[in-house]
Length: 231
Image (cartoon, rainbow, N blue to C red; front, side, top):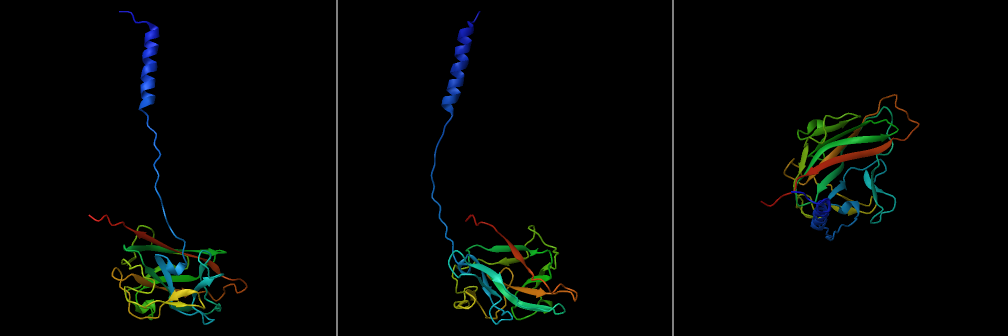
């Protein structure tokens, strides 16, 4: 049987047309919402504890203490080249989310390339880490044994209350001079049980450290959380 080429072409066009007609396009809209807040009101927030050499908390606001232009900074003050200084509670980390948050690792990016910091997490704010069995050294003057594959400290689920630590009312308060929340309460934090942890920072410069420059940089605290499916 002989088929007219024009019929074949028409059939192909009909197939293409039917494929085109089968393609669907849709526009679906959803809303979103978030707020930019003061660092002391964030769901994972830092709280002050130890003082710097100027009598103000090490953790403080740098610049204008507004809502969206507030930057947290750690100000350690003046330290001599042959002096080692340790702050057992340079600041604390508090989880206010209603799910647990894991701290995986810490790293430091030092402006100028020189880093003399040692950073540990531990439970007892008044005890040096060498005497605190809960302590974990996460950063040692440019080196670390931890990365995103680890869970070094688990912050329990919080209560979304910026005045509490582990549900205890009034354990964090506001300080006008530093422009941050702070806590001087002593109950030790337990890894995996409490919603907060203390950060010890030691500054260990060598005797021949350059005293003609200022030492600046950023401390990066990496966290990871798993969503509760409710099953």
